[in-house]
Image (cartoon, rainbow, N blue to C red):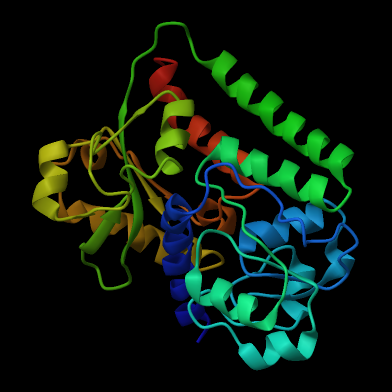
Length: 304
């Protein structure tokens, strides 16, 4: 059951990353959302993290089925998911504000019928994530703390940029957003494309994302396509494997030896990221940027 939940969590993360494209690029707090809201429901893991980071955790009365961080949210009531909101739970909890990441019409239409104030921020990339932190800080009178969090993120990003040599090698990177795992095969591989999130992480770290000009945010690609692109590194995002035994993690990397001629395989440059924040475009995304930078450092610093 736990594996199934984590698998669904990974799929939801992709859905969240894609859905924000449909939302307003510069969200503003609706006038009817009160700064004194005391019964907030969050329908996105990233929003939940931001609320707790802003010291608003005591106002959160429920979260989505997929919110797991910080640990204290795991004991909160669940209000369903973006695709299957729990109407009974929402009505029973009597929220005075519901926050939805992206333009999910099923939830928004439900809230409109119930006359519940809604806030719809977005976070496709780091600038938008910071914008959302500031938005929530302004909305709920936590502006000073929000500005401090954003300033810290900007400072850490600047440190990553300064660490790059003026002229450095640019390794090619393929980010595996999802694939079927645990069967010793390479099937149904979904890679990061024109998504603005993982592509931004690669750019910050000094690399070049492959495929570099896709029409889709998360295209599927077969083994032949991967061989043609032949990236220098493969970074696999697998939060559902967090806490799994070491042999499971090794087997996941070993799967790539089915493509022995791949440059990343020959040079043992296949990396696995299992941290839960790797699939959540929220305040901890700076940790992901730093992890990408650490992985690419030997390439961009031109060291063995």
